[in-house]
Image (cartoon, rainbow, N blue to C red):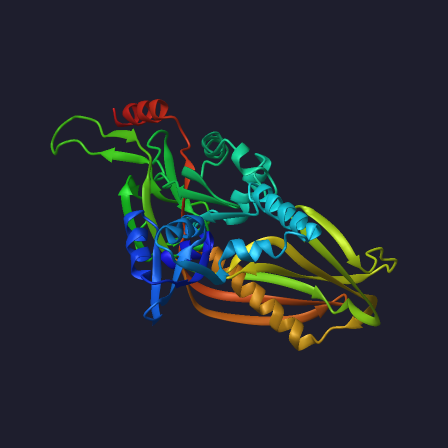
Length: 414
């Protein structure tokens, strides 16, 4: 640090000659003149280094002790700048450059988002852009606290937002909101019925009365767990059997048989590239895009467009708001061609299997699956027949209000 300060202030190398040069050294020490690098050349001559601002004072002290001082050289930033004192164009350019750096450093060049895991960064940047936060805006003019509050109001997925300004970099730190647990609605009268036909393999009634047992065959829509709970009277009493309605809950697994179909035309339009292509280069700075080579006006009826973006970065992988964009256009024509039947059948089989897995859910299991294919009216039709283990219960509203059902049951029992 000391060497840096000496360079910025400037240094001078001096040769001191006299009968008693050591007296000059003593006077310098007494008057606060800093010096270093003392080298004795002979009994009456020495060499030392002082700062430029002490040069005049040292000459005056040398006259008091009868010593001659000669300057052998000088170093430092002042000497470097003196070389350009007659180069007015250079000095003007340097001054303008420094002013431009000082002015442009007040504008935001990059916006970084940190702390998000579920919410995409692009969504947060899009919301900030709607609030006026983007590369190129005047950083000190942003009310960061107000922007953070408005972002929270607009994005329910976030619980906290902090915005920090580091020179030309705007740092947005977010904390995602914790999803509230799903509230269980206990109101109303519901039954659990079968979504599909099957044979019951396991039943877990949590609330309500089980209407079926393991091994029973059920049809779609049949009640599996009833929301009508039966309360038997004490033995040998004359009290009637009573009923009350509730929100039935539970899980019912069954062995099911699913049949799914899918079809695809055996002839389809395919791309045939004509060999014509075109490339367009453009430069994007902040939010402005400038075409630098090529013409983006395309007259072809059909073409593919491939965009390649090369983002300029600083050391440390910090992106700059400058990117080079290459757009490639390839012309093609549509031709009707016959599809490969085996490949089309494999494609449909994979689609049917994916549909089946989504249909039976994550807890479901496919025990066996068999595919069959046939051609009808120029289309390939594939049928999948599968045996599965899945949960088939779903909640539906009850068939009668609690009051009416309860009264009818009491009248019947009486």
